[in-house]
Image (cartoon, rainbow, N blue to C red; front, side, top):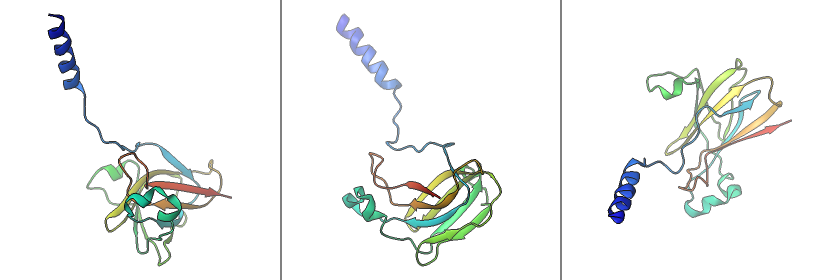
Length: 151
């Protein structure tokens, strides 16, 4: 009788669990910057992607960058507030932006990433950002990075 109850409890517990993705990026975590300019890098390199310096040595020319008012990017019918493209060396500059919360979407072919950013004078003065659009592995490593360099 005890075995049946224990088995019933295990089955009930397992049926309540919800499968989830290994990497679910947090919405509403804002990278704070004073300007939004920098470089887009990345490449799909298979197991070699674990080496950040290698995957970030590939620039992404002609990548499309879309900036949405937060949280409008999560609505499929929203139009971006501003658009930009990277040059042949992967550099971009959105110019002067009003303070506020945004979602930045960077994409090029099969590569892409999104990040929530806040333009605010309270952040350390931003020199540039580095956006790594490399795909990530199931252990959440290997890409999808937003790195801020300050003065």
